[in-house]
Amino acid sequence: MTTVFKRRLILAATLLFVIGLIAKLPARVAFAFAPDTVQTRGITGTLWNGRVQAVDVQGVRAGPINWTLKPLSLFTGALAASVECGLPNGFFDGDITVRASSIRIDDAKVSVSLADVTRNFSIGPSTGEVSGRIDTLLLKNQWPTRADAALNLRALSYPAVGPDALGSYRLVFDSALADERWPVVGELTSVDGPYAVDGTLSLGDGRAYSMQADVTPTAEATQRLKDALRLLGPAAADGSHALVFDGNL
Image 1 (cartoon, rainbow, N blue to C red):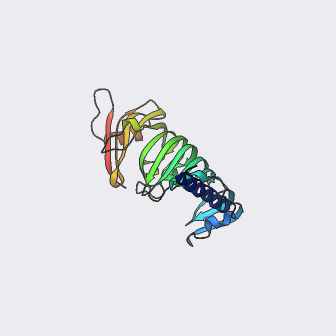
Image 2 (cartoon, one colour; image 1 turned 90 degrees about the vertical axis):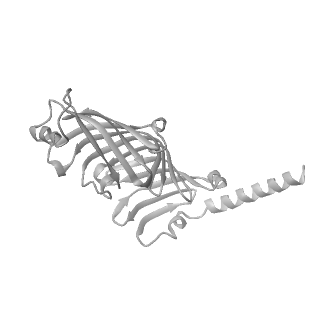
């Protein structure tokens, strides 16, 4: 056995011993250095396998949260865990990997209220449900930079344009559609409701977004919703209207 191999073996054994000690620490250690804006209740278990009954971050509540640490991730400079999290109007169940500059979500199932999703954006309140699977989602500075996911948007409404129900849609993000300008691209199609929609949603650097879609009223569209489409400009020969908007959030 060479000296170099011995040193590597000793180093690996030492790291495993330290990781073992850390993993056996009480779960409350995970929140020991959390800011005052993070309030917790009912912390049990260990860092390796723990549970917190409820977490409140500036009025946003979640829980219960169960996690199982993946200690080998520490060798790559990351902190990874399998997480099950209850949300006020839904749930999250998947793998989360946290690095110094990014958060990655893999193999996840999610269901959440659209009102909760749009609360912190300047597009106004919306209602409905978002659910589906996330194969991969990479976040940097709290903004998506890669996504492979299939989401269902059900029973949408947007009070800013009236009380009418807007139907249900499917949004599929595919990293194969991405390019340098738009690293996150999703295809948006209608499932049911007053509008037949076929378009794309793109996200880029600087929290930029662009949505382009052809929107056609269906037999379910009320006169109010038909009139709203006229604000987009005259209809094409097939009766569709071009919906184009972009900006930065």
